[in-house]
Amino acid sequence: NKTAAKRFKITGTGKITRRMSHNSHQFLHKKASRKRRLEGEPEVFQGEQKRMRRLLVIGQTKKKNRAVPVVVDREARAAADRAKLVSMVTVG
Image (cartoon, rainbow, N blue to C red):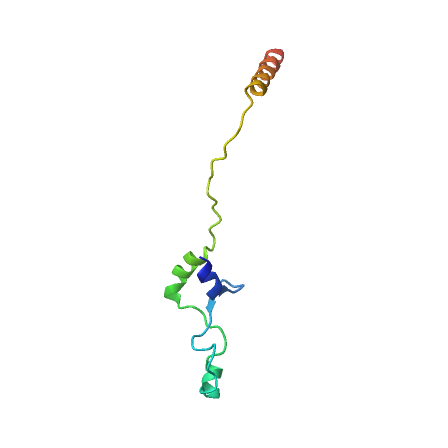
């Protein structure tokens, strides 16, 4: 999920962190202690970790199977089949 990928980060140890809310603008009316409290990136709640991992697609490397149309030249295929038969006869 692209939206989740922009908002959450995965640390080297596997923890998921997020940004604090109310920390992007209008700093003039906020006290210094409040601004300090809003610093940093806290860890996502333990109960939300499973959902976040699903959104961030951690550990899922499965790719979709897509059928690719193959154009086969009948004469070339027939020649290949004949070559296989000849090699089978000479070996056997």
